[in-house]
Figure 1 (cartoon, rainbow, N blue to C red):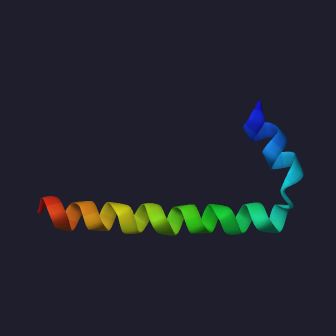
Figure 2 (tube, rainbow, N blue to C red):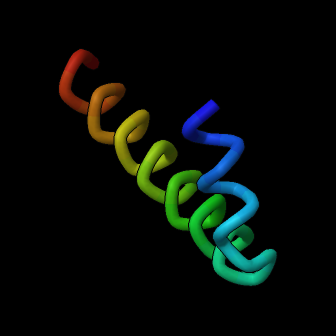
Length: 38
């Protein structure tokens, strides 16, 4: 429920930017782990 309220409060542009930031961090996180474990 908190996420739903947060989604309503945040503008669409900010939410899209946040998604891209999270995606970038997740890709970096996966790359870092793959290089660490390999």
